[in-house]
Image (tube, rainbow, N blue to C red; front, side, top):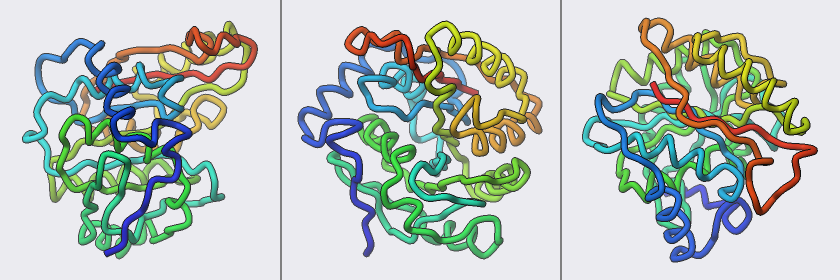
Length: 260
C-alpha cells in the first residue's frame, strides 16, 4: 500500500490534529447551510487557511449529505512541476493530520488506459492545491474514494472528457481547486476578478492563467457543466487584502467559491 503523505501541513494549515479540527470547526460553523439539491460541482480556493479558508468553507458548507455521492473527483493545478496534460497518482491513499482517504485505484488505472491522463507521482508529491481540500472533506466525514488529478496545460475538451468518464461509472462531486488573480493591487484585483466571475457565471470556458491559476481544470469543468445546460452560482468572493491579519492591499490574491 502506497500513501501520499501530507506535504504542506504546518504551512497551509495546522499539522496538529486538534489544532486543525479547531480551525476547521471555526471555519465551517460560521457558514450557513445550503438547502435544495446537493451540488455536483464546487469551485474552491487553495491558499493557506488563514487567507482563503473562510471562502472555501462557504463552498464545503453546501454539502449536507455524502450519501448522494459515490466518488469525489479533485482537479487542481500544478505549482511545483511543469506539466502538460493531466497527472494521476499511483498512491492507494492520501493522508492529512486527520487520517487517510482511499483512492479509487481501479478507476484511476482506467483513466490512465484512456490516454487522457498519465501516472505522475512527482506532480502530486508536493502539490498543495489538492492537499488543502482533504481536511475539509475529512472534517465533514467524507469516506468516499477520491480521484485526485493534477491538471497542467490541458485542452478543456480533454478535461471535460475525463470528468465524463468518471461520471459514467459513479455519481460524483467534482471539486475544482483554483485561486483567481495574483499580485495586483486590491482595486485592480477586484476589477479583474469581477470580470472573471462574470465569465464563470456565464460558463465561459476560455479563462486564462492570468485570471485563475487553475484555469485549465476550471475550463474543463465549465465546459462539462455547460453541456448540461445548468447554472452555476457564486457563493463568496474575497481577496487576501480582506484578511485583517494580513492587511497588505498592494499585492493580493483573489479567492472565490462557486457551486453548481
